[in-house]
Length: 308
Image (cartoon, rainbow, N blue to C red):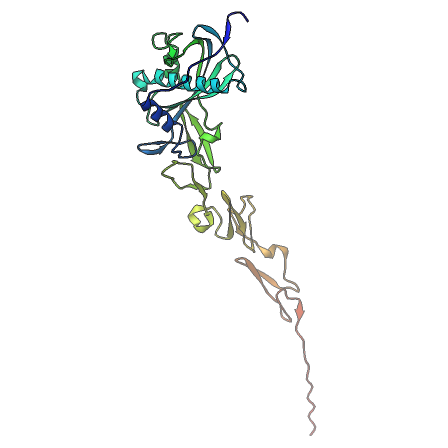
């Protein structure tokens, strides 16, 4: 292609104070679960994804070199772009001291660049603000993305900025497997599922440590009938009516009523059935005995003969 040149750039050596900031941003002191370490401790940062197309490098048509052949160039390009965008954002007043890190996630095609922007937890900028800044010709002129050695021309119309959905990329979420994740602009929230208690981990926040609640340990935590047994399960519990009781309402042991055993007429030989709590008794007719009046009483006749 006429006019197309492969990228050749000088070694990238940013200012020492910026190197320290970028090293810290890249997680040498990792908090885990996508957290960042700040002076206040481990916090949930605000993450955004940005994509744009580079058309020219130092006035020549941009062609992304083969990473297997030009690995050193690849690393230099990443370093320069991360550095340039980091300071491009930091130059705007609302972003001052808010930009934690800028990291290139991938190159797509002829220097299409996908970038992740991480802002401090207490920052206020959102994806719309980032987009407005990056597409503002005053702050982001086409040939003004420079690292000092190299000038990158960006197609401003290709810029796309969107919130990173941490709930969709679980490496950035600390939500417990027993919680739901709700994505928010720049962040996310975790909520423990019903049947699980939130332990309120001070590092990771709500919904990150969810433990099963034993609802059977306290009658106030379950709806089992007084005449039912309670069995704890993961995230819930089961109720089963005790012997002599039945749940005729289909409420799974929530409403257990005494079984009227007398309906089945368990007493024989003229016995009378009396229904009691969780049991019954038979009042047998004369000459019979046993639980169900099935046993006949034996009769002994004694004859006495008097001889005078």
